[in-house]
Length: 183
Image 1 (cartoon, rainbow, N blue to C red):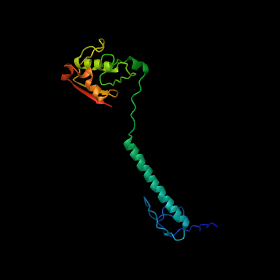
Image 2 (cartoon, helix red, strand yellow):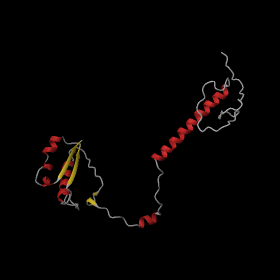
Image 3 (cartoon, rainbow, N blue to C red):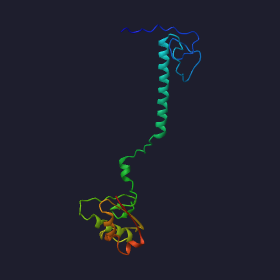
Image 4 (cartoon, helix red, strand yellow):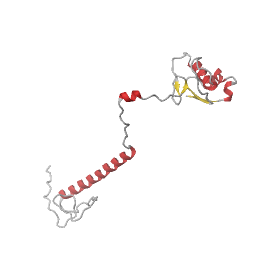
């Protein structure tokens, strides 16, 4: 099988072909469109070069569009001012408000996990009662400001067991809003 060798390129006189090095454009095109096949006669080299330049222009446009989109979606990160460690340690700590003194910062999250039958439900009962009535939690930790709304998320007890549980019995919890979410 023989390969066809392309004919040597001969530029057209007055050509507006912007991509070929031997053709000099008479006008500047910002985004050249692909030429129709055979527009430059039998000059396969020129047509190939034109199509390559067209694809390169499309890729540059896509690359610039991606760069702008990335810059829009991911603005530059503003780093905090660098502090000397000695100066940082010399600054006073801001007081931390606690939901339960020394155990749970106000606005923080607490996760209770332990093995089966370790007393998690009883601990939660004591916690909810302390949060609602403002008594000491475990007879040791103060609750600075009692809550009117408590949410319990339980992924261990069934709905029937939760309903029968002593946590939800008694006059104390009638006056508060306790939400229970079974996972």
